[in-house]
Amino acid sequence: MMIFKQLFDKETWTYTYLIADAISKEAVFIDPVNTHIDDYITLLETYGLQLKYTLESHVHADHITASGLLRQRLGAQTAVSQLCGAETADVQIQDGDIFKLGANEQIKVIATPGHTPGSISFLWRDRIFTGDSLLIGGCGRTDFQGGDAGALYDCITQRLFTLPDETLVYPGHDYQEHWVSSIKQERTTNPRLAGKTREEFIAVMNNLNLPKPRLIDQAVPANRYCGLDENERQDAIMVRETSRPVRNEISPQDLVAQAKQQITEVSVTTAKKLLAEGNIVVVDTREESEYEAGHIDNALLLPRGVLEFKIGNSPELVDKSKAVLIYCRTGGRSALAAQTMQQLGYNNVLSMAGGYEAWQKA
Image (cartoon, rainbow, N blue to C red):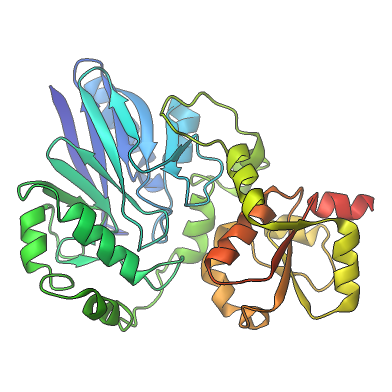
């Protein structure tokens, strides 16, 4: 037996989904919205459910998640793709991971990058929850947050459209009051995809000319911290310790260690030498309050949580071959930011070991 509810936020056109095992009473929310926190708790109490996880299809740009609040109030674990940069999430999701509810229900992760690099879908029984990757009669945009139209086409056509025809499609949003579709329906009639080659799809996506989401400047940074404000999330990025039952999970510390294997770190001494020589852009990836308390002269403020979509607005970073020195408080966030910049095509990025604390001590 199972319990399933589809909920809707009228302000942001966002769908939230409740899935629960009726026997064990364990439950998950997919893509909860922070303004509905009380509604979610009431719903759980009505059915006598225990919230085990909140699952995010990606780091959202149009609303702030309720996952951090649900963790605080109910102890539920937050789960976000390891490619989203949400280092304070309890579970760093990987493709193929399984979330179990009691002995009867399981939700499988299918990586569907393109809208963002960390976008994922969730397969449960005969239903696929596609977030912003595949919408009813459309798909998510690919013009910010590291979007990639080619990657989106590949994952939809090769991973979603290969599911059984009768698989029900539940999207993360809908702006036409459509609630559910099917794989066959989208494969055969979706105007963005049906009958289009990869090149044709990319051309369509590159010429949408859409305005940026209204809440993007607030939503993306907040959602990197599971929707918590700056006071609630202070120092949480590197110190979150919790049990992680899902297989193949990677802790925040492991993510930083992996990033450092793929980037170039320099000491404070080397950093000072490079700055003295000139012709290098200095990027501070800390939060604004940290920056205001003290920073390296002429450092460009690009907090880790907004780097991907703000970097294009920085004239200093138009030339992707120019040397860039990144720093944070202790060197963890800057390593992850350096890795992100490399993925965006910057080929001369350096992370300062020890961060601003080491700079001050030196």
